[in-house]
Image (cartoon, rainbow, N blue to C red; front, side):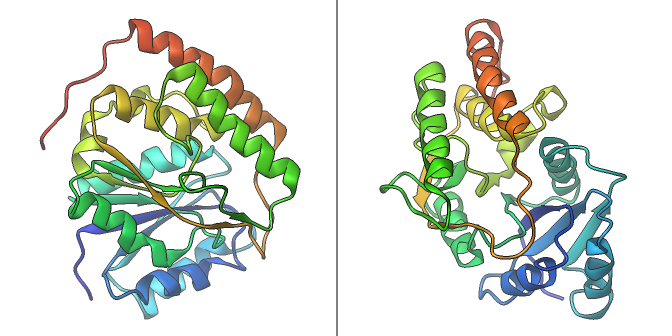
Length: 250
């Protein structure tokens, strides 16, 4: 069993084609990471694959939270964040199961926080141009202009405001009042960045290449984008009137 100060949180729903591959890819890295899979009752047996790997190959390095039914991306990550804080990890990562996020970029996100002193590092598709592979042009444009919209409304100085590939220092998640994060879908990623920014933490975007999934089915839908569109306006109103917590040095 390898010890690690890092935990990679991977939410899953029907990812049987990808989950073992992504787990093995993370554990094959030279830098040691632990993994927490949060499965929302996948009927395809995703959780069973994780359980097998926990017992055979990755005892004490791979962990699983099983939830009943689809409860939303945001609630999955909040559950994972709380678990990571309870288990004293210093660096907490968000990552997709479908290889749209390259496991080889995890050490770069880690280095931005551990070596360069940033509190949140973001795997950014747009900090050095548009680095997206195998997305239809309509999806690229929607994502790119969504980030522009978020910057315009909120004032965030982040190019990829909707990115879901991130590394948090422990003190960020212990400062943010996780139970007060309201959004569950696409807007969750925006709200977490905005709250991190409003609390005064240092943020860095690390350029990555995003590759659309090859196996499995995308979970994106119109309601997710709708939540984000109207949620951004609400975040901006909060920014005017809400008192954000002071940095917790835990």
